[in-house]
Length: 394
Image 1 (cartoon, rainbow, N blue to C red):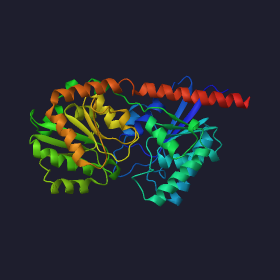
Image 2: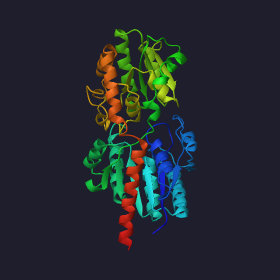
Image 3: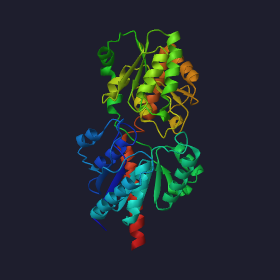
Image 4: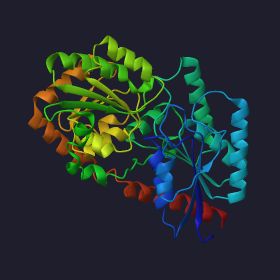
């Protein structure tokens, strides 16, 4: 039996939000008496913020593979190069466990791990691409590809119970192979953010009387920002002193700015791009919105609730596990700007009840979604799989 269990995590990119903090925390916080952890990452998308600094601040120096990216499209030459590079690293490092994250890294990384003879292969679904992303033909190809990859994967992890249920329904793998381990975040800065009140308003030149409704995430079709802008247009007609913040960046930036112009919202809507000071951002928000069409378990909702902010969100993926409708915020159907607006207006007009919802939300997510709890759950899984393998080999 080895002195330490070597684990290599692989992710397609270290972009802001989503899966990136998870792989950093796993690499950083795994018990160093039991594990030796390394991280492989690919190139970030030009539209996405980069969290490489975040990893390095925590003493994590990823191995960067230029040919590995996170765009799920056929790119035979670069994909083969990425598989070879991952394979070469795995053969050199000889890990007992390879743990992949995100779709493209899961596809290429699991193939490389299998070719290299890795004993234990794990993949985490932080969401899925099985609806609202591609046409039916490409979607079916993806589903069948994941089913085939499921055959060479020892365990499949989902970040929410709802996502686990969906993967079982899609027949991605047998029920007993798919487990749920909730994501974890460093939430202390959001829990203790009262001292940040007013900082953002001062920076943006807003008055104390301004109400703020915000959305945080990459500007991509799956995030449904156009419905947020539709809702903002309705809300503005009833409440004049409201400002709308769009935090994040992406390929839809110019298109969304054009939509805001058409809706005569530019005086009320601010596009802030990517920010590293999200605790300050949430501190001055009165309502946080999520308008996604598909979601695993939303990081922005967890951060918002940790900041004691009420949320209006679409009832997709694992979101209903975070939002208790009418208790910590409101759930609406996706692609419905009018429904988003109705719930935003209710929260802005019922300020005391909105604050109570935010406080209840904080109790719901903390410490449940603390990163150390997630890492502890991952350690238990790794040890369990390793012990099972070791017993079989003896």
